[in-house]
Amino acid sequence: MEYFLYFYNIVLVLVYGLLMSLYFQLFLQGKKRLYLWTALLFFVYLADEIYYSSLEFLDTLPAFYQEYPSIKYVVYFAVGISMLICYRMILAYILSILPEKKEWGFLAFYSLYRLAAISLDLAPVSVPSWRLGVYLVFDLLPYVWFTILSFRHTARHDSRFSAVTYKIIRAASALWLFLCCCCVYQIYFLPELADREICAEIISVISVILAVRHLVYVSKNQKSAGAQSGFAEADLETLFAKQYKLTPREMEIFRYLMEGADNAEICEKAVISQSTTKTHIYNIFRKVDIKRRSQAAGKFLEFCREYTQGHPL
Image 1: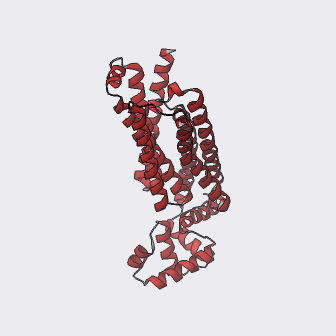
Image 2: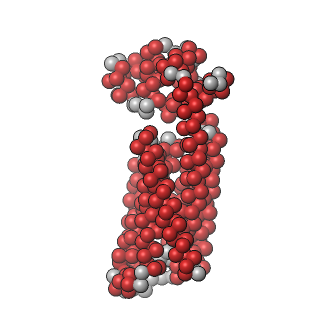
Image 3: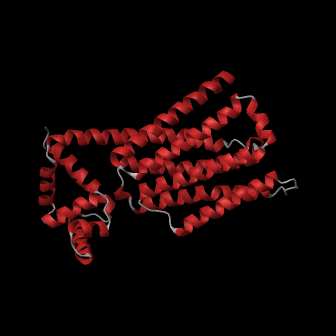
């Protein structure tokens, strides 16, 4: 059994390291923050796995942590909060819903709660038995919120997502619910394993499956984009503008929208006023039939894909 665990930990470390490097390379290529936050998430998984592997396989560390128990709790706290931030920011860039101030306030409050819980565990005082119920409620709150957020925004904006992205978001939503059930089981039936959160192990493995699925989808998109390299980008943009009846100025602004520029950047690059920019963007949204600027790049890519399928090289 010990050899199996040793092999299992080595495999996880290699997988986390590989996924972290792949997503970081994707970020360097496309500068999409979704890839950066996913790379950071797998970095946290990697650090977490190395830390707990050292506890299991290095005989000197358990005695060290028994002498200084606060170190173990500090690492556990840092890993838990880092994972929550990465999960939320990944959802933010998938759903195009950035966290509001009240969400960051809740995270700060949640961090204080976790610190208070650690202090109670370390303090030489008797803690009432009902504390498990309090721990359970607070530990579930972030994941319940992720579930609500995922289901609510996918239900409202189904048209914004591809079939694969939609499935990934739904799977992640179900994953939050599963994680809540794991927390309940662990707190009430496996309290002796509280220092190694079982649900964190489960969610990390399932996250690997979702990440691999996402990377396959990204790879297919890149191959599709490579198949379109026979067409000059300028020619495709001309055809796109002709189909949607965009003026040269509107097509210029549409390029900036695909690059993710905000109104101020568009004003500076196109040398036009704020009101003129808003008017052009409104006309572009109406002609191209999009509702958010984040859909601009997807709309152009969809046009390119349909054009190449109808006009094979």
